[in-house]
Amino acid sequence: MDAPVSFLDQLFSQGILHDSGVDGLYARSGMFEDVISRFEEFALGFGKDEITEAMVFPPGMPLSDFETSGYMKNFPQLAGTVHAFCGNDHDHMGLLQCVAAGEDWTDKQKATDVALTPAACYPLYPILSKRGPLNADGAYVALQSYCFRHEPSKDPARMQMFRQREYVRVGSADQAMAFRETWKQRGQEMMQILELPHEVEVANDPFFGRAGKMMGASQREQELKFELVVPVNSTSRPTACMSFNYHMDNFGKAWNIRQADGSAAHTACVGFGLERIALALFRHHGFDVEAWPSGVRSALWG
Amino acid sequence: MIPTIREMLSKHGGLPVTVEELEDNSDLYEAGLSSFASVQLMLALEEEFDVEFPEHLLNRKSFASIAAIHGALSEITEDVQVA
Image 1 (cartoon, chains in turn red, blue):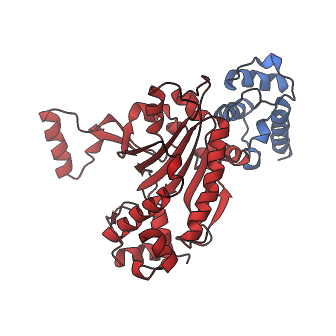
Image 2 (cartoon, chains in turn red, brown):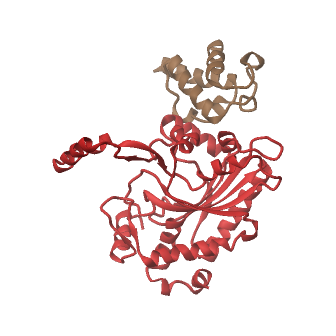
């Protein structure tokens, strides 16, 4: 099972994903997309009554909000920003000459006010912040977004552009913690129904550099992040298909999101890696969805 | 070493209290030291003492108090002397 290239090649040869020539950037087949939308529908069956609001974001977010998030402090290696041509006719001629000569034409591109969204919940916080203090119930939002992380890989479960479905809880520390514990249980329940082998473990984000080692160790010691992992591309290094995160009041402070009593809001989120879950299903139940176990089929297709 | 640690903590710790108010054994996280500030402090201490924290000391415990930082730095500088 520890053969990263072969699973990717199988996905290509089965027509489930299509190679683009860039690692981590793939076209999805209709069947792959169907599995994802069925999973999203299935996931919505859990905690449906608790959700107060739903939002879907485009794959880009305002650069200013991206800066506020502190992403460049912790994950500069993963970030992507959108640059565009902003020149005149003369600059355009120069650009075309560079392209024709096979030279680098990108160094004259200028940064726009758009960054690629690194995590589905980031664009939510500035929206909540503008609304003023939360009411006592806080907020409970269902989200979906395409996300970008610059980490080209032959592991099909490590795409550069992928979708996250998230539920985000914003409110008191107790509300955020209770939410995370509930979803840790629900996540395992979901995986049992989908008959996927899984484990929940303490995890850390891939913080950059030596300083990042310390951030990661600190995150683990405080048990701020848990991941539900499933063997997808490797049994020795299973893939995180869900994560359960408690951010304390970091985002509440960064974006000035306040609780009813005026103190900084605490946030927690559960994230589903949609492509990863689809890949896990294909990996464990085969490439023919018609032949998937009946329990899995009825959970997804009803 | 302790006075230098206190000075670095005052500069990089971003604490809402003054360093003078803290005992050597006071819990710095309780005093308001954030994860990010502890990293800033770690990098500043490395520069000041010309050392590099080994991986096993890059954790929350090493920066939990002035005494803990002193202990970690002593371990590193002792290693340097032995080497």
